[in-house]
Amino acid sequence: MEQQELQLLIEKISLDYFGKPFKHTATFNPRLRSTGGRYLLGTHNIEINKKYLEQLGEKELIGIIKHELCHYHLHIEGRGYQHKDQDFKLLLKKVGAPRFCNQLPERNTKPTSKKLLVYQCTNCKLTYQRKRSINTSKYVCGKCRGKLLKIKELHL
Picture 1 (tube, helix red, strand yellow):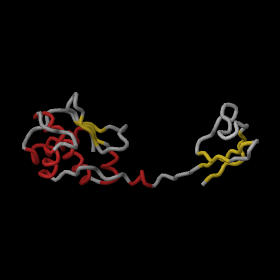
Picture 2: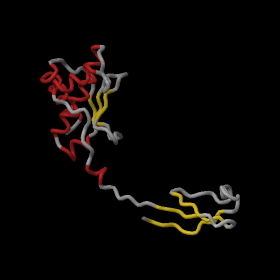
Picture 3: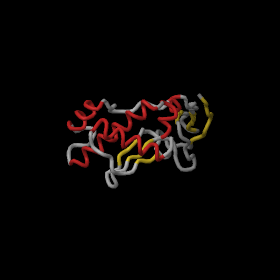
Picture 4: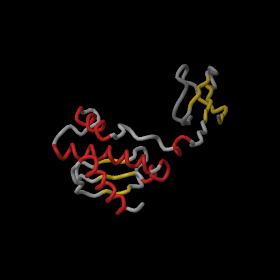
């Protein structure tokens, strides 16, 4: 699907479900990561995450478009367009739009390599476990102010 096809689809959904025209611009935004789309208050444009179409299909895309059009039409009419507003919740129900979009499958399958660093005080032998490294020339033991020494690095 190209930008022009997206524009036509949004205009069609706006007329079919809301009975009102969509008079602004719709684009795919490749920089969107954690959301399916967004409505821009300043320009009234709608941006859509193309990954949702590619990975979850057209049904999910239509749900995202309906959701963003709810923001769009309510904002233009001067009614409550935020997620917390009653007007927004009612319009979502009326047009069958989801309140939140599903999570992308690629986000669930990222390998998680956890690292654990173990430091020990050279004075009192107290050990510290940290996820991030410590600058041992700057930081000292909190108990006796002795010098810290990195003794092992575990990869979980």
